[in-house]
Image 1 (cartoon, rainbow, N blue to C red):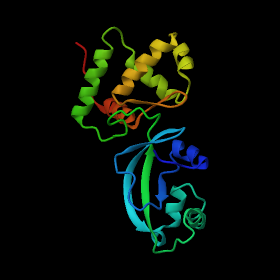
Image 2 (tube, rainbow, N blue to C red; image 1 turned 90 degrees about the vertical axis):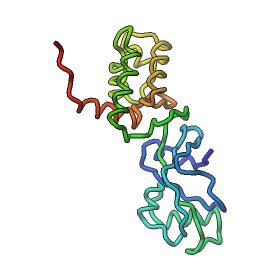
Image 3 (cartoon, rainbow, N blue to C red; image 1 turned 90 degrees about the horizontal axis):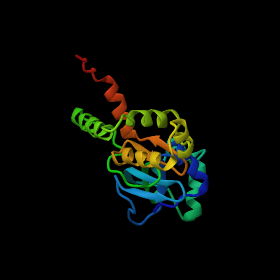
Image 4 (tube, rainbow, N blue to C red; image 1 turned 180 degrees about the vertical axis):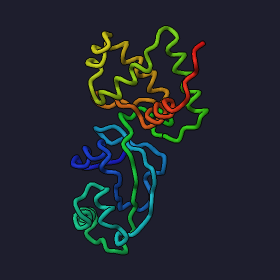
Length: 204
C-alpha cells in the first residue's frame, strides 16, 4: 500500500500527478510493482530514483501535484523538519492502474504483431456464440467511467451478464475497472489502434 493525502487522489486518477517523493530509509516499492491507494485503486511504479532534495526541480514538484518547488519543500519539511539540500529522497514515477485487480500487462502498450494476433484470436473465441467484444469495447471507449447498469441498458442487456463479459475483456488486459464504470486500458488502446492499422482480409 502507498499512502497519499486526499488532495492528490484526483490528480493520480486523472494522470496529472505522476510523481511522489518519499523520505524513506530504504525503498518500499520497486519498478513494475502495483500498490493499493485507498480508495482510488492502485498505482503502478514506472521508475525509482534515489536523489537529494537539492536535485528536485520546479518541474518535479508540478509532476508531484504541488504548485511550486517551495510548496514541495514545505511539505517534506512537515515530514522531517531537518531536511536540507543534501538529504536523500526517493523520487517515484507512477501511473494509476485502475481498481486494483491485477491483470498482467494491462498497462503495457508495447505490443508486437504476434501479441495483436493472439489477442484477436482470443476475442474471436469469445465471439463464437455471437459478436459482442468489439461492441462492448467501443461502448466503454465512448463512455468511460459510466456505471455498468447504464452501459448494459444501452445494449439492451441485463447488468450482471454484461459485467461478466467485461471481466472477460479485463482478463485479457484490455479494460480496467474503477469504482464507477470502466476504461479501455493502455494495452487495450494500443491493441485497437494497431488492429485498425492492419490490412483487412478480403472476403471471397
